Length: 211
Image 1 (cartoon, rainbow, N blue to C red):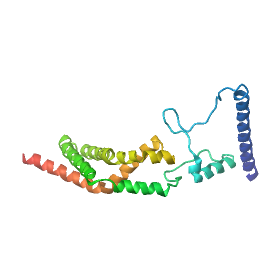
Image 2: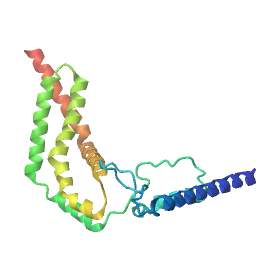
Image 3: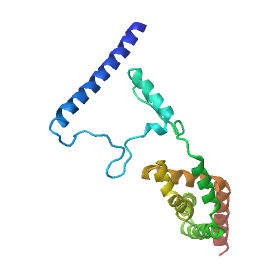
Image 4: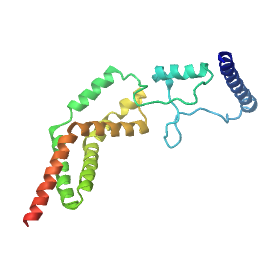
């Protein structure tokens, strides 16, 4: 039984190597003989900016995993990657820059965010006076949008050039980074925020009863 499994793995590896060799032979035969532009090429991003390739130099652990799969003759049908499994090391200079950008956030910017959120709560308390769940969910999501607009996006825009120079993130990953940062910041005060929303809603309900 063991020999049969080993033979199957060996056959898979040989078949894969043969297919790769055949591919490159066809590549040489069809693309280089007449000095035409190669029909086959490798890209990391589509014309629309969609990421379709990964630079494995930045992810040595992932590279070793993929090489292990290759050497084993692809004994696994798929590779499941969970969030945080494979990460790249961020240079200390970049971490220092991020810290500086956070420190540079002014009290005026924070006050603007607070005023926008307060205005939102008051408007939604009236708008969804009879729809508590809708009021709660809409206010939470719109609060995240305020955080993104006035704090997170300006912060990330300031880091565009370092991102580009270090080849750390493309447009897709920066969008995901924006979502992750907003969710992380919101989670810091979410519990207390929900309490405030409930208090505002209850005050509104009592006021309606009084009138």
